[in-house]
Image (cartoon, rainbow, N blue to C red; front, top):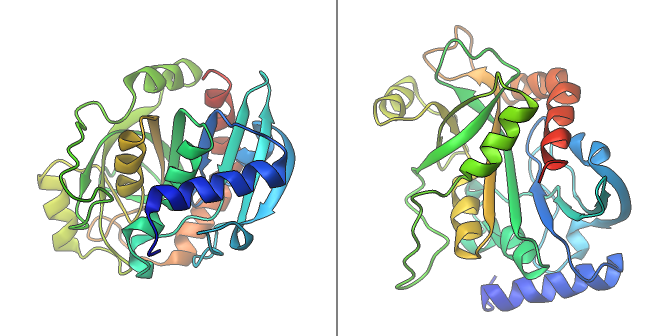
Amino acid sequence: MNTDPFEAARTAADYIANETGVDSHDIALVLGSGWGEAANLIGDTTATLSASEVPGFSAPAVEGHVGTIRSVLTRDGKRALVLGARTHYYEGKGVRSVVHGVRTAAAAGCRTMVLTNGCGGLNDNWSPGTPVLISDHINLTAASPLEGATFVDLTDLYSARIRSLAREVDPSLEEGVYAQFAGPQYETPAEVQYAKRIGADLVGMSTALEAIAARHAGMEVFGISLVTNLAAGISPVPLSHHEVLEAGQAAAKRISGLLANIIAKL
């Protein structure tokens, strides 16, 4: 994406408004591995667009992600923009492409950004299928969506207010720090121990860069991870994307219902 990233986001938002017939959306959701069914539970889908037709978007490169952008009318009359086409940093398309969806959501009027993912867990008490609220992150990609002298405070990046609402839905929810690695290879056992020692509880290949862009755009950010596997060196078996997909499918109904109930409180 060689054009101004914010102008590109406005172009995409205008396209979405024209095609969906919805001038402004309130909440945006990026649904990662295991979370896709939530789109069917938060309300009625009134329009579905192919991501590859929306300016700046492309079809997802990862199995388990859907290639659509949906406009959903929620239970309480709000408008949710569900982004099923996430671009990962490891795809090599640049950070602007990674956060284009977030910036498009902001340009479409969204004031709340919900980021979900499937990830590796560093706490052996969190079995595959466990949802964990993200309280903070560690960006290990050596990249940022911010350009130039753009200084943004990330002290309270992940909304304490929304995490509190989430615990009203499910008081058993735990929270942890998410570390984003660049990928696409899984972390080595040594890298997992490094992440653990610097304060991470979860490891994955998304979310942190998107959260930074969302804060810069002035959105309230809520993050929630699905532990799909124990991380390398903690898990007794080799890691695979098939394992991630299986764990996501097994937990999909439960976690999607959880997320829908949280969205209903926003």
